Image (cartoon, rainbow, N blue to C red; front, side, top):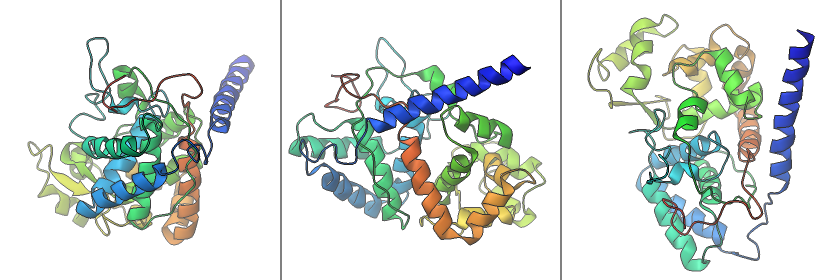
Length: 318
């Protein structure tokens, strides 16, 4: 038992050390000289996309999360399949679910027009996530920059490392811990579900079989999500204010109105209840913790220096 505990501590320390070391290689001023118009170009494109379709804000935020959780924040989520590897787009958590790739293409094209092969697709995802949150009324933060792009992707890691909508609290905590993120980070980052929508297939079991759900809420969802069929029918993750980045996600959980099983796990008589309660009544605390957790998540195993490349097309390697 003692040796296992020692190993677990050493492994955890190594994860935090590596994440911290990689983050230290990033900088908020990375493009000041090489592409001074990079951030304003990304901001304008994200603002235009979200103005055209409010849901796109959640989609861009989710792309960054799903990128970082698979081999680090390296833009691998954007790669199409090739003859040498199967990309991450068709993995279970992403297939027919992730969106916004066309918006990223537009951003990349506009950035390339002001700075040729200077700004990575991975950094575009990180900045776009921040700008999308701000566009929907959420907090801002200084994005660490200097990531480079992967030249391969991992279908298997996408299937294994991204938590599913049916995940219980303990496995959720574990999945985030493996990425160097604390329980506090996990609960704060879950607040991203204050915007966006989910497919019927992601919450069907919950609305028909679980008891920790408000009966009126379950009934309201069943009309759009029958026991069979309509897998792709959408419902908002936050039915109160689905296009505003606020703390209603947590308020909903207190009322047993979490859309997915994994959401309601944050308020289900477990260790996450206290923090969820705090966020439900203190939006400023949620905003602060969310911003800090996003910076921390953005530092997961980035490629820096001479590793990787700067793709000219986010969908394929150079």
